[in-house]
Length: 502
Image (tube, rainbow, N blue to C red; front, side, top):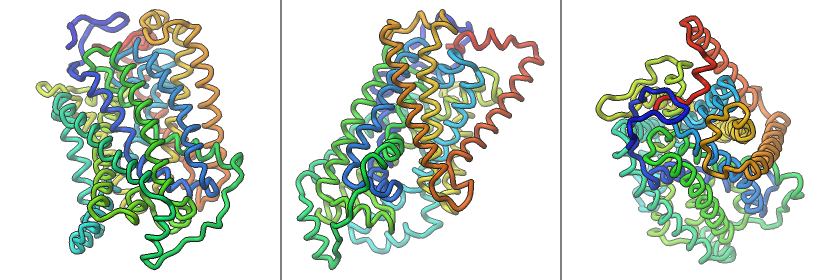
């Protein structure tokens, strides 16, 4: 718990949040935010989104992890000096400028809320697949109906909001077991994939009266590797939720950086083993052909070679992986809103903390409301990969700002820079930041080029213009709120030179 004394470089009042989350809870927040659709869907649907990637998905996955590693190191450095709610916003606003901190985190908040809605909406098909594997045809048909699917999606979303509203201790008691359950059930997929060969898969396919041609050729690696890696980078988005929970960590300067590094490292290894196992059993040509006709998932692919019981297990693992995304992601986005309001650049009501539960209840409800729009958009018209593309753009920009913040902090805010405890030497920080800037800028350029030059029916089906519109909306909000602060006589330079209250 907090000692009640203001930290160095902070204002002297208190935020009201409870510092009750330990290292395990923080790590679970990051892992549970990362492992979901990025594990069960994206490594296989990428065959449609980046045609010709073929057998090179694992190579692209490894390359996609590189910017995540540099971003994780930047977050760890900054978290050790600025352990507050709304981490990424706080880091950029105190190191670069409050405007950059706000608009970058505003687009991050928007895209993550949309992603929460998408995740909520895709849970029901996995529940339907469980019913199909159990031969519950009536239940499967019911789950496939539009109204039921929408109701279940909204139910899971608002249940996740309720978990967050109950407080940090209740949240931690749920998320830690779900983290271990996700790894345990995912291990079943890894063992199943490596236990079966592609010949067995083709034989099972033939037994069902289907066949696939294995004559398709992959595109030259140089033409598809970077676009695929930029998209697979989305699978590593989520560890930043740990930083957003900086106002509720028991030992923030130690546990925040450690949890970030554990989450990035463990998830990278898990992703690689999981994806390698599925492609070991299933020919990439089949994945590519199926992805052009329908959405494919890891459980759906391995179901051809597994008995019904194990099919149920791996589909259940995918459902658990998606369900546990929701509370962790909501925690992250709600703390961004809370931090903006606490600084006065968002409506003050959003910074309210429940007097007994000590949770930012207004920010949680507002974020869940925005995610509800994501559910409705998915139900009526949404494009799954458009949402992923927007998320990748916003997070690449955000991570790029984190690397720039590491470079700038000692000159822009030496008082806060003095508290860095992870890679404290500038000889260590500068190479990490420079390498991170170079890699992240390259990925952002490749991702933007692919988006702007690829086929699209209209401009609003391209992620870059949509992201720019969101940034413009964020700018309007920022200008309006900072003008109101200045009119009340608030010294903006002084406010953004120190950390928010403990």
